[in-house]
Amino acid sequence: MSYEPARFDFSQPIRIDLYSDTRTRPSRAMKQAMVEAEMGDEQAGSDPSVWALCDYSAKLLGKEAAMFLPSGTMCNQVAIATHTRPGDEILAHEDAHIQSSEAGAPGAISGVLIRGLPGERGIFTADTLREAIRPVSRYSPPQTLVEVEQTANKGGGACWSVAGLQSVADVAHAHGMKVHMDGARLMNAAIALGVPASDIAASCDTVWLDFTKGLGAPLGAVLAGSRSFIGEAWRWKQRLGGAMRQGGMNAAACLYSLQHNIDRLAEDHANAAALARGMAQIPGITVEMPETNLVFFDIRGTGLTVPEFAARLRPHGVAVSSTDAYRGRACLHLDVSAAMVEEALGIMRTVVAG
Ligand SMILES: *Cc1c(COP(=O)(O)O)cnc(C)c1O
Image (cartoon, rainbow, N blue to C red):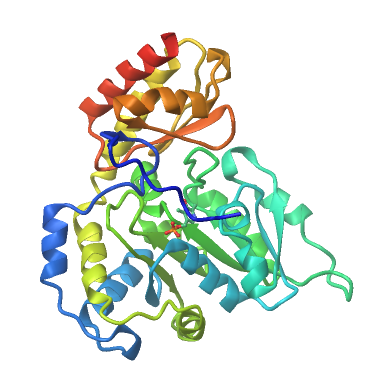
């Protein structure tokens, strides 16, 4: 078995890439910021651009300190490793990215169990959390961490409300658990809810956000928390190979994205709504109405599977992704314009009819 990704067919370029919001390319202005970045040795504390990004991010997220890491997956794993000990149990939604999409890392790296909680659109309630709390005994795994995903990716890009987070965090804290937010798309939630990211993350002990989703940077994520948490987390950053050298070049792109690409996420949400409305009118497709930039749809009624639908779109230069045979996902981001959404809809109508 090879797990290496198949090589892309470069003879068939994708023009309208709805596959993922990770598919953005750095803009000319972002690349300029990278070229001009001051650099040093990140793991020795001498890269000024990385410090600038960490300070800016900590403030944005309302935490004392932050660390720069190569990916969101590493933010989750550094946070889990720092918050827990082997044998502990994490409580998270059953569709959480840490459960389904990080190659078993919480078990492999931290030796922890994950208990998946049910809940509509990737979100669970304080009552559901309360019901999953085990008696403290010699037999039970220690439950030390609750994880929430903002926005809930497989939940259709749904947003946790500030009140919902607060009530879950209150239960967690009352039982001595910490709360960690996978904020891969936290800024999408901040824009959709009209609430500062720091208010959304206020009830969470740790939070990270990804620069390679809708923010449009080529690499990087930032993990934030208390100064003592970040201080301890540095050993895991080093241990996992996440301590970098001239990280400033990438940090400059990330800082650029925070300074230029947050407010425009509203355009992605408007484009997602337009795509959803249009797709809902195609016979055989049902659409989960989006709250943010992710549009999930069910294609069963067309007689096609999502991979078949995707294969028909591909020669037209359009890409979508699938979560299972009949549930697909289209993502909006800064490289997809309103005009491209209209064009994609026309192509979708044609390939479903044909
Ligand atoms: C993309 C994603 C991650 C992982 O981020 P990478 O930067 O790709 O490692 C984690 N959680 C959620 C919800 C995501 O969508």
